[in-house]
Structures are given as C-alpha cells and as structure tokens.
Amino acid sequence: MTIGIIGAMREEITPLLEFYKEYERIEAAGNTFYKVNYKQVHIIIAYSKIGKVHAAITASIMIATFGCEQLIFSGVAGGLTKKLKVGDLVLATSLCQHDVDISAFGHALGFIPEGKLFYESDSKLHNLALQVAKNIGLNIYEGIVASGDQFIASQEKKDFITKEFGAVAVEMEGASVACVCDNFKIPCCIFRSISDSADGEANVSFDEFLESSAKVSANFVTKLINEIVADLS
Ligand code: SAH
Image 1 (cartoon, helix red, strand yellow):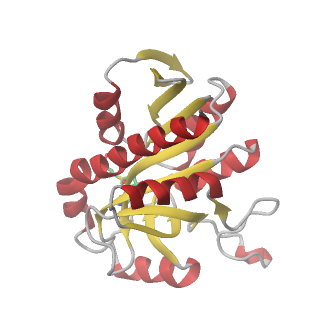
Image 2 (cartoon, protein in one colour; image 1 turned 135 degrees about the vertical axis):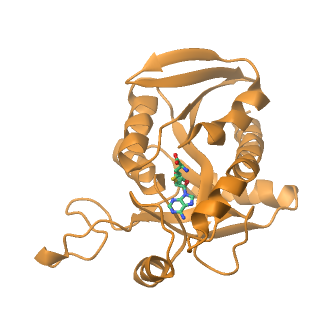
C-alpha cells in the first residue's frame, strides 16, 4: 500500500518529515517528493505550493507516478463559523470550488460541466479518522470545506462562501485534490486545522498560527496512518 500526504506549504509537511525522520528525496514535475518506508506501507509526502493548480499537479503525480492508492491532505484553513477556533481540526465531508463562476450560462456557482459541485471525502477513511479522534479524545469538526485561489480575509467574502456553499472552512487546495482523486477513483480525505477566521485579521492570525496549527493537523494524520496500517493486517 502506498499512501500520499500533501500539504500546500513547507510548514505543513515539516512536522511529518520530523516524525518519520528517514526519507528518500525524489524530484518530479518541478517538485520534491519524500518517500518514507513505514511499517508495511510506503508514504509519499510533498508540499504542492499554494493554490488549486499546484495541488492538482502534486495529487496527479502522487497517483500516476508514485502509485499512491489513497491521498490525505494535511494543512491549515480559515474558519467560517464562530464555533471554529484557532487550532481546531476540521475533517472535510465534501469540498467545493467557491471561485468557479460559469453562471452566465445558467450553471450553479462552483459547478463545472462534467465535473461535480461537491467532491465527497472517502467514507472509509472518514470513519477511520473519526475513530482515531474518539480514541485520543480529540474533538474533530466535520463539514464542507470550500477551496479557491484567494486568501479570504473579509467578512463579505466569508458570508458569501458560507451562504452559497454551506462551508465551515476555507482554503486554497482541498477541492482540487478531491477532484483529482474522484477522477482517478482514489480515496481521499482532507484535514485542516484552523489558522485564522478568514476575516480582516486573517493575515496576522495566519502568520502567528501557521506552524502550530499545521502541527495539529500533521500529528493527527500520523495517528490516522497508524490506524490505516493496523487496518491492513
Ligand atoms: N503567507 C503565505 C500565503 C498563505 S496563503 C505567503 O506569503 O506565502 C494561505 C494558505 O493557507 C493556503 O495554502 C490556504 O490553503 C490556507 N489558508 C489558511 N487560511 C486561509 C484563508 N483565510 N483563506 C484561504 N486560504 C487559507
């Protein structure tokens, strides 16, 4: 079994590389991939660089070049609901692209013909993640995550994304990874720890909490990997 773990920024994968310690570096498609042999599985780790296009490239390479059979995204996001505080962990139930607009032709916002408005996370991985959270007594928040090539830092944009898509968190990569996985028929699961509230202070909060929140998500993913491995045997 080969499992891929993607972050968007270096800070999002650093805790993973520190945890697994030994890895091989492999260059492909303008990016660096880190290969870990862990128990009876291989893990490929990379940060894609920010945004949906970069994340889609990395996800595709992980599947088509490195043979990943499952993809997990670990990173940070802006919280759209007051219930979500910095450091809380969100597990995406489904993901959408909040910046897609072909509505001039009558399509719903976020919908691309022959694509999907919402891409679901894999139910088996999702349930496994909930089990892991329960085992360690962690409160995990489930909900729709919206992705777009914009750093959201205003109440107006927050309100739009919440009302239009019912999203609880916003980031810049998840939906594209979920879309790639849907096309390749690969299970995927997206985790985001809250770094900011996507409001007027978001950039300041992001800079302050990127590292600590990225760690929350990465730590959880290492525990999920243990559960996936245990589930194999
Ligand atoms: N400070 C960085 C840019 C960060 S962009 C620089 O200057 O290089 C924000 C990253 O964190 C993206 O990868 C995105 O997925 C996530 N993110 C966190 N909060 C977000 C928000 N409020 N809106 C959109 N993306 C957010």
